[in-house]
Length: 310
Ligand code: KPL
Image (cartoon, rainbow, N blue to C red; front, side, top):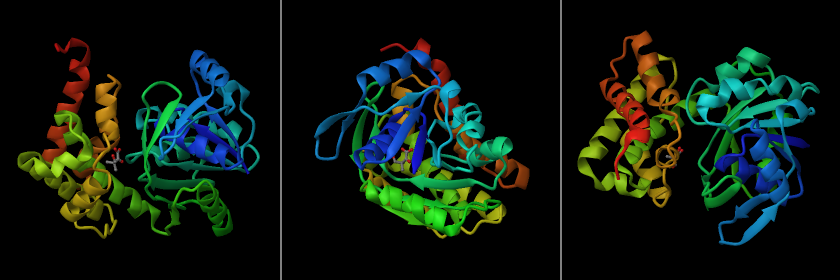
């Protein structure tokens, strides 16, 4: 199976590094020529769970050099999905599949706007990955990846099974679910609670339940998202507080992806997370005051980044 991983961020490098290590034919797709040349020349530095360090010489391809792949995995930040989606027609020209493993809602819709929905898969991942510098990835924690065929997809069950098998051969737990649209919401419910508060307070996930006022806000944001999911016709099978606690415990040592973005001065995924709850809530008549407030604060934090004093 020929695999293209779009986006050499933490998750992209982690997946490409693991697939490559398991002998798969994989390339990384980057849109920045200088970075692509640097990564191609130097290789990806991969620090595994046991602390072992390896340089993986994974081919890095620019959009103009793309060849058809059997599986394209979109791992870019949600704000870059519409740009990454422009790569998909060339990558999927041989009938290949594209899988989004990004945070938030709206990614699938942006991909489908370019490719149509038939050859698309969606998923969520609880893998822990951090990126100390470009092309370097620390595998920070095992976690399941859940994939499935969303509404409108015609990907066959044997094709889905082959994708899951690719993850398993690379030592990454992978489950298939036939209600992946609900699974996307269930992950969003977790992210809208944990990500903004860990980013605002600059704490690791494990600290959040220990901060009573922050915890109340996290649970309130997640509970609003449950209401919006229900109003959207989903049936998320989770108790928001219990689920938040489980994820904070399982990923206690992680810096959430939003905290990593804030610390690095990058734009965050707030629009695809709490912003989506607010927008969809407004359209459905479901109040989302906590998500609106957290969205505004995160945007203010992004805007303040260049002005901050130490
Ligand atoms: O998905 C995550 C993220 O940081 O974006 C969680 C599950 C909160 C783990 O850090």
